[in-house]
Image (cartoon, one colour):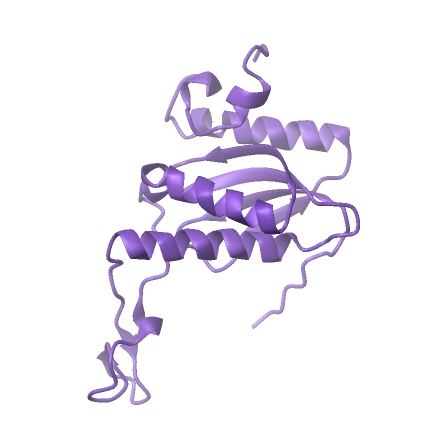
Length: 177
């Protein structure tokens, strides 16, 4: 198994793509308030700037700027994903996935009477996410634009203004596309 080492650049501007395991789900837009809360709580504890963000039904893209002297974008994303997952699991039961026991047999428990096995819950998010460190102003503009145009690219709307889960409304409401 390869060991990917993420770059650690204090104060970096970083673009992310984060996917759900179920790429056909509408979980993120159905529970966008939970996601917003997870982001708000994480930002209150570990600040970062949001330069752009778009939430689609089964994935999201965002551009963040970290504080000077801080390089931990991965920890922040992990906290957001964890908070969202915990709140979602509280609000609706997650489907379970049968795991293999030590003998290779499928089952929800390793031994009789062991109680619920929390490791057998279906994951919500893909384990990893894709990140790109922004290199310059042109790269920044391209990735912000990518966030905003993504709902159009996926055929969800004809113009970014029609997609409600986007920072386009905060930042580019009057811009010409």
